[in-house]
Amino acid sequence: MSGRRVVGFDNERGKGDHKHFGDHEESYVFVDVERLIDDFIQEVERWKSEH
Image 1 (tube, rainbow, N blue to C red):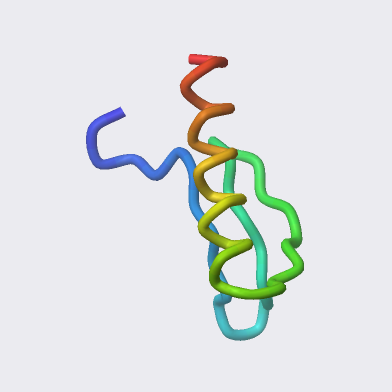
Image 2 (spheres, rainbow, N blue to C red):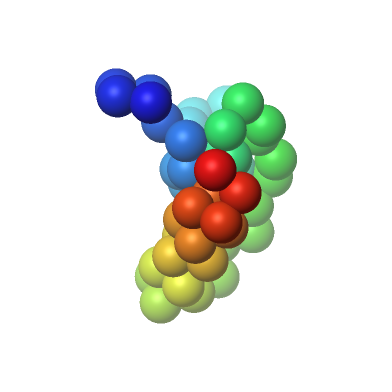
């Protein structure tokens, strides 16, 4: 996995807010920074439990 993104949240111009989980990408509704951090930690824990 070295150098490969496995969990990420992004707001790329033209795509809008979205998240990455492995090779899967889906839209994400940004609420505030605290929620973003919580959601990120939750997705990291999910990744760790599945891999």
